[in-house]
Length: 188
Length: 391
Image (cartoon, rainbow over all chains, first blue to last red; front, side, top):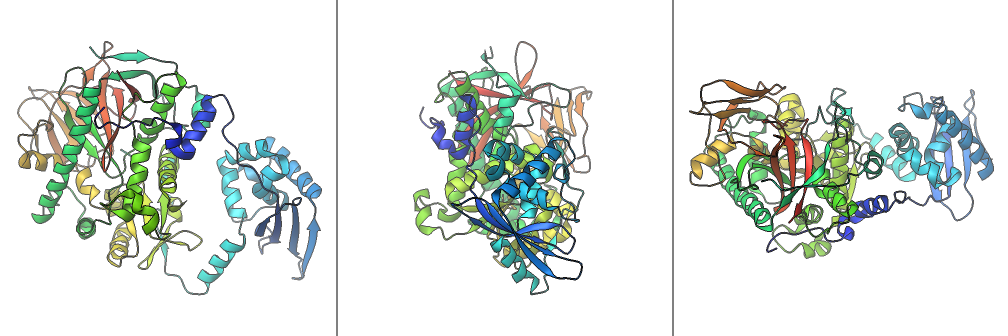
């Protein structure tokens, strides 16, 4: 072949090649090793919870829950791995029964504590199998993203809110595709 | 006689595990064929040469269109003309990838250009990854396929930094510039195509991120994600002409962002010139002797012809008319508002069951991979993907 190039090796397909090879060999798709972490979870004004700090840790999973009561008083409580696991398992069971807020797309109302913990730490609390399976669920993925406002994200957001932003978004609402079919495609 | 080889297909579960969820069409039929087209090395070389020559011709024709102000003839929205010109002036607006569609090329039929999908080509996952996986799955030699798409596009991302120099210079010159990848939300094919391109860019060495179109923010100072991170490059799997007509304010803003050199937009705005089927008329005028071009006109042709729309996609709003002026085949669609273009009719290669085959050759700096679509006389969005093997 004078000019034609071929793939030749799965290695030339990067991470995609590894995934394809593992599926073809009958293995599960490669799984990301879930790391234990230390979380600071804060209750928002709307009552929902978000992760505001996240640090990988060699030790067990643990969290500080920062809540505000109706008088505006802030309290912090510690939660150990076992407690986190219990909450995550309860929420996972609800998801399986189709009764969890994680089954639907995120809303402005924010999410409860158990849902938040499961959304950000499913793999390290309940095992990689469950964690990876959940990450295949689009609504769960969205919750994972919206529930995690760790240090980097938070500082970026604060920096921006300091000035009046004139940035605009487009493609409002109407530009939605049609799931797993090929019709309605904007490609060619 | 068309050389077709039956093989063991990948089941739906395996396809889904590798991220390919759009395996079944609306009518329940499988989108990925369980056959491969046998292609000789000489045939594959001919596709390679055709795509490379045609790309050079497209570049010349674009220059001609800009010099002679023929934007209206090509149906280009007026509010994108300045942006297109600007993108044409500087090589940093590098064309990442496109796909030429051809009739012929196998079964002793000559290669003829059907169209060039230069702005937002799909079919990428199937051609770059799936047809290779089919070879592996059937214990066939993975070297027997004209398919270097993943590496070629990855290298082409590096050329955003190295331009015409050796891509090996990338690591030395790259200074952390970030690419944001966007598609519409809720269409698996487009989301995965965009993610695949993001992986190619990440493997090339770029810092990348993704955000759905509606989550990207713009002002005259640049392009940002919802966390206010700014990006030097924005790849959008969304047609330029739709930005021009449906999002005029964004079209204006993108022009300003480019003029202010705040971000580089991919694929570049000038790919809309390539995308316009009107370019095939310009090519015919400039290269009347090219063996790859079918006579094309802005007026109906004598004899049998195909009527298409300037920016029609996936066979929609296409009509085949015979020499007597009768409509032989027609596919409806949403592109009827665009001006028509008329191309001499050529029949696609057919198998023994009467299915038609169209070749798709991906181009990223040079031709880099081949795949086929199988369907009726007009290849629409119910056509099937058929991989190939070099024989």
